[in-house]
Structure formats: C-alpha cells, structure tokens
Length: 315
Image 1 (cartoon, rainbow, N blue to C red):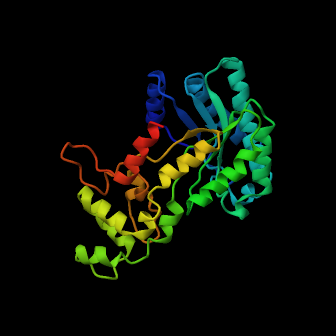
Image 2: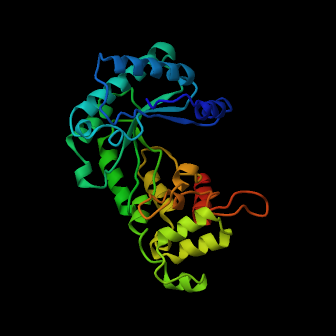
Image 3: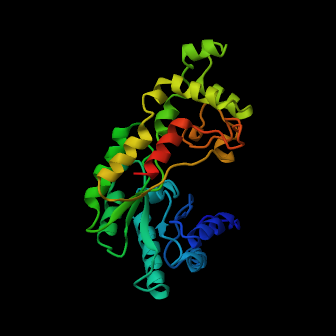
C-alpha cells in the first residue's frame, strides 16, 4: 500500500459513511520496483498495514476496491507476467477472509477487484486481464471488478463495457470509479488556439492550447472566459455530452454499480503545467485553479460538466 501517515482522507470518508452516505474506498498498492512475493518480509508488512485499514473500514464502507490501477502501479515485468495476478488474487482473498472473520454474512461492505485500464486498446487486453476477469468470475464472494475508462472517445469507452460485462459472473457488477476524455485532451495540448478565440482575446495566432491553460492557472479568469475558451475548441465542443453519454452507456449495460466523476481541480494537476502535462484540469466539475470564485463566493465551474453531473444524479 502507498506509504505515508496522512489519514485525513480516510477520516473524511469514514465520517461520510457514518453519516449514511454511500462510500467507495480504493486500496492502492504502489510497487513500481516489483510486487511483493508471498512469504516475503515486504508482504508481511503490507498485510499488517492492510489489516489496520480493514479494521477501520470493514462494515462501515459501502465498497472496498482491492487495487487502484494495478497495471500502472507495478514494474513492467510484473504487469506482463502472472505475478500481477498472483499478487492481487492473494490480496483479494485476504480481504475476503478478513471480512468473513470479522463482519459476517450480513456485512454491508462489498469487495471489488480493480481497476482495469487501457481496455479500449487491443494491446491492453492480455492474458493477465483475461486471468483477472476469470478470477473475478469464479470468486462469487467478489461483487465484481472496477475499471477506469480514460479514453479518447465515447466508442472507446464502450469497448471497456464490451470487454468487462460479458466476463462478469452471475449477479456481479462493475464500477467505473474514474472515467474521462483525458486521452483526447492530451492529443490537443500543442494545437494552436482557435483563430476566433485568439482574435477575441488579442492573442498571437500561434499560441498553443497548453499555454492558455498555464496562463489561466497563473491568473484565474472569470467563468465566462473559461467556458468561452473551452467551447471554442472543437475537440471539446464536439464531445461536450460525454459525461451524459458515458453514464447512459453504463446504465444501459445493466451491470454498473457505481460510476464516479472527477469533482474538482487540485494542486497536483495544476502545478508546473506545460506542453506535456496531462490536462486533468479540463475534466473537473469545479475549477478553483483556473476560474475566479463567483459573486456568491462559490468556486468556478466547468458549466458543461456541472449541468450534466447534476442531471445524472436525478436519473
């Protein structure tokens, strides 16, 4: 599990759970130098820390996800071998056994295995992802699997569903605890800003998109200017129903338990922004790092995502 002593986020999540809100806790195991092997000192230490987290959350959280983005959070050799499967199968079984010992058959906490990534790319569907889904399907104590459709198009998002849903077992579901068009946005960071926008804002015609975003981060702008920029960019304007469209696809599958969307810009995605940065700031509902607060003092928004986000809550 990720090192560190900051428990504030977990405390906030527990507070929400105890107040009656549905909650999802993703357990991240970040081992880029190699996943721990069974019986090793590193594995023993990991399981000890894991039990501490489970003691605080089991029976309180609605959902615990074993893994965040496993195929990114391990070494290259692990992700292309059986090592990744062996590790996560052991951890998942440990969590299931812990729930059985401490929480009983009526435990409110469901356990998912997650999260699969890059499933829109045929090269991302490997013997390891096949074994992943086989383990989920043949372990009925698991409620299903998580996936993170960060994609360049809606149809690429559909490819996630086409892979995951037929491989679920009877009664199992999937989570989409993250989804976005970040891969589309990344492709356009070095584009020139649209000519009409450049003319309106008195910018040099060759100004790249990333530079405008960097300038917004350095000096936040009124919400109208933020939305003027976004809707002037065809790659944003032409896909601005993505949130609604993707949630509709999730629901039409009949197997989606939870879909979660990025709610706010944070410091990590806003620092040192440059031509090769991942533009997560375009994905957020609330935009405190690029947009000035409104007259009511509330943070600025991406109004496209905000409207669709609110609409999705009522469906």
